[in-house]
Each structure stands twice: as structure tokens, then as C-alpha cells.
Length: 159
Image (cartoon, rainbow, N blue to C red; front, side, top):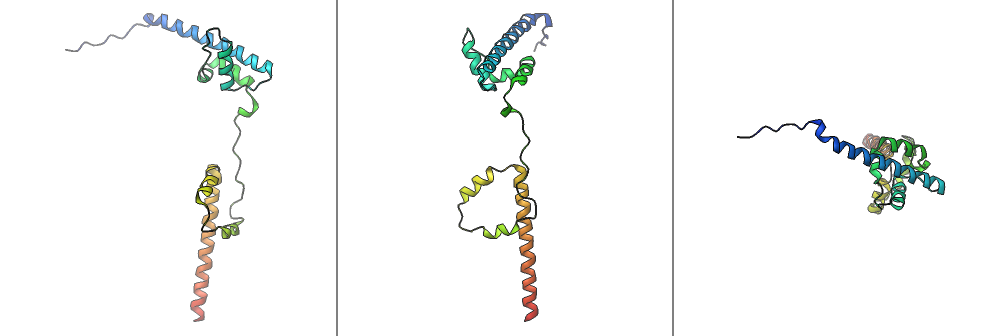
């Protein structure tokens, strides 16, 4: 009924591999030219600027895509040598407030505050900062619960 498909031989795709190699070489050469021009001009070197510059200097007007820089190992290695400092990976900031300190600041939170503004402020924090904030709030609640229980017990004793 169904015919088994015969896997193609590798020699049948040699033309395809040679096409890929030509495109890879073209991308590398175009990327290197674009990076060199950006460095010569004193412009920042980023994926976007290299891509844009390559489109301007390409005779075909096609240029290279930013992902081509990432996927082409040789081009990415060359790009990494000239990348602008602001694009290098930086570690995230540590938490601003140490745990269990400044718990009294939670006393100043108002019930009728602008919730959308609060949400915006929390969305700007890092995950680590949010976790620390949550721990501080839990500490504050635990302290308040302890204080409330102590007051209840003392008021019960005095009666």
C-alpha cells in the first residue's frame, strides 16, 4: 500500500551545502565590513547597528539579520571583540534594603493609595528584590501579630 521512503544520499545535497557555505561566507564578510565601519565611525556596535549598516553597504541592499550575527560562530566571535560595553551582561543589582530592617516603613502604607502606581513600582523591581520585599512584609506581619497577641493577653489579664 504505502511505499517506504528512501532516505536521500548525502551526495544529493552537496549543492545545498555549498549554497549554505557561500551565504555564510557572504554574511561573515558583510558583517566584518559593517563592524569595521562602525568602529571607524566611533558608533556603538550592537546587533541592530551592525544589521542596519550591513544593509547600507550591501550591493544587493539585503544586508544581514541580527540573528545571523548570533548564529554565525565566526561572525559572532568577531562581533564579541568589538561589542559596545553597555551590551555586555551585567549582574543584577542586589537588594536595596536588607532583610528585617526598616520594618517600620510598612506602617506608613496608606489604604487608599494608587494601586496602579504601586504595581508599576513593583514591576520595575528584580525578582530578588521582590522576594526580599515579601520577606520583609511577612516579618512585619509576624511582628504585628505578636504585638497584637501580647496586647490581647495583657487586656485579658487586666480584666
